[in-house]
Length: 342
Image (cartoon, rainbow, N blue to C red):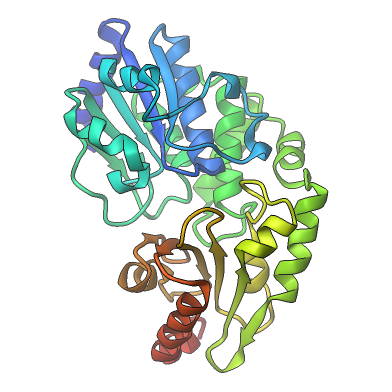
């Protein structure tokens, strides 16, 4: 995004109070909700009529975030949520770059005359926004949101709520600051957020230490289902619909499970396969170390995408068939996986 673009956005936001809708991706994670709620607070502080409109519900471990009670979950059958979109003068797209990531909301976005602004950090953004602020080298959309405020010359307006939300987004999307996209710039931003009020130990506790008994039991099931393929430095975990139901699964309970597979000694690529509770598809989470791109692997084989070392996908097939496809694809890419950390 150019200086001219930021100048135009700044003028747009300063001209008068606007009806603004902030949209995270479906099944929003800590980064999607953190960046959305942070920008929401900045906009409402500046007298705009802002709404965070999430395509779907999200995990309970994020419900403590400041202003979470103001979030609206989209429902195509609810005239109120449809009207929110129709009335919008500005639309912000947070932490995603393709309208397929917001499901039923897409048709209303296509029809909207609102100014569209994308803030994201994923590769290969689609061309649907009027302004696109994207950098795939940045660790989180929440860090991009910080830079967005910097470029508007309003970073001094970051308050406790904004700092808390941005810290949460960066924390979750960097795996507690351990992924390779965590740079010295990231740490300087996090230090500034702490200076502005983010209480780091409380955020860590809220996000990482709130395990329910059902999640702990699911974790045991996941570890029991862990399969390692040493010849290709790969590991994967399966979670069947039956196993999820038997352990009282709630949205967000399997968050981070794929990282357990990646943490196995000698593993460079990991996957988590989760059957949907109500529909015949399998959700896939992929992680890697080194230079092997699970983003490309997902785009080529699993109808998804993401980052080089973290991606997701979805396949309309049985759990068994998806796992067999994964084994085949991994076998075909075995040499590149083995070389990825050399």
